[in-house]
Image (cartoon, rainbow, N blue to C red; front, side, top):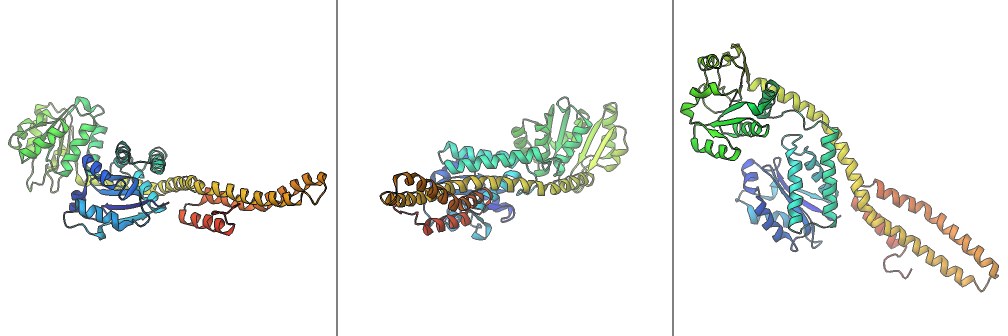
Length: 423
């Protein structure tokens, strides 16, 4: 299989290069158009915030990784991208890498379940732009099966492995019905923004954002359909919120003990969750002594994250077993495309020789013996070809080394003259 792939990801390039290379759906469409018929016959592109990868079947055997690297560098480089930022994959290695990506074990956060949807979107985009073919569709089916099996047969995606998500999961344990609750997120940096998005995804009833730079708060609020409070006024409104998640970079406390104590009195001590995921801390930790205040800081959340990460790491061997099973199944199917015709050609070759020799003997033996000779020679041919047929079928079922299969099949064809032979 001549599938080739190049990848730029969190292991090969810093965030500024990954961000510069991240492709929108419209950019991917243009890239596919430029690749089609010039570099690839069929293929697809995966592009997320942490990886950009090209997969495809070259239009010419001479096309290699360097051509793909050059394509990306010329099309999307900010000047810092070099060949050292690429991982290169070929044939089984390319399929194996794709399966690892779809399974979520190649992600920066092990068990990332968003990448599965992103892989599906990559195939769909290629299909919409008529860039998929017989082989890429089969690869897609296998990659999707890997992702689904990992989701149903392992727990690698369970449990929060970011402090933002850990905070929201803890909130869920305290308040079972979030659609009747209101939340305030203080800070719109990466940690705060992710926490806000998780709250939205969990169906929070009302969501409000505040930030030192009002424009950033408004931008995030528009994206997630939230309200905005100017930072100078938010303390006056904290009585309205059942949940407060704070994630600023402020050197000073955003909420003091007296701020929270006063708010709790106005709330008649109604339960309030305070998640302080800032470094240094945004909320005075003494608030945890107040009645019905559920307070967690980043240290307690990191304990949860570390425990969940260990659980996910322990699931990796199960995921790798699934990937290997699907690799064997895929290459068993692929090898059969070559092996089955070879078996047919080999048997036809020997049958033609046998039939010719029996035909030559017809005038030299009694008519009643011709049928006996025909039966005996067929049995001999079947016995001679039985073991080679069995071994070729085993090769189809067990080998993930496409190159090895091609070499063996080529040797058989050359040995018996199956390439262009009159037999």
